[in-house]
Length: 170
Image (cartoon, rainbow, N blue to C red; front, top):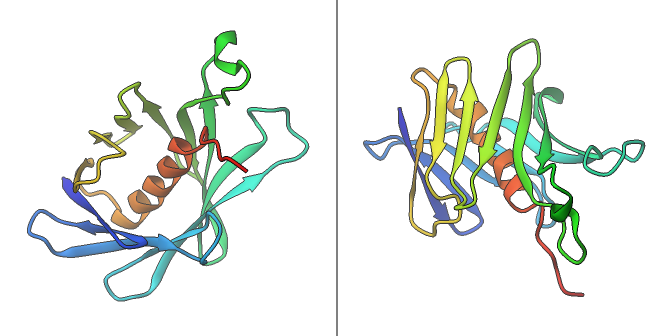
């Protein structure tokens, strides 16, 4: 199944191949990382966010979540490269993937390539994003019979992962 992801001002539209809107991914607040997945009926289906875990060592101290009705249904943690040069100063560590755990379900794996393509392995098949940072519409390949709202939440998690190593001037 091919889903077209179009960039709009402050939101992403998820469309089928015929152009019918399936979901919207937008910020939950003006500032912050939280995002919401909205269905075509204008009802919030999922909420996504980032949790910082202060008791964990660096590299394990952050996780991404998807909530449905206030309950956490999916958690993910970034996976970093194992080589020592990767953690050199002044460059922050670059996330190379995600380990996604669906509540009462299987684990999914996400792998980021050097050219910013993304592959998502699930028990149902493989999902692909050819170029995550493209300004044009993206063709998001999903396994057949996929839950579009869950995949929109996973797209938000991938967005968090891709921006994990961003640096900001202050």
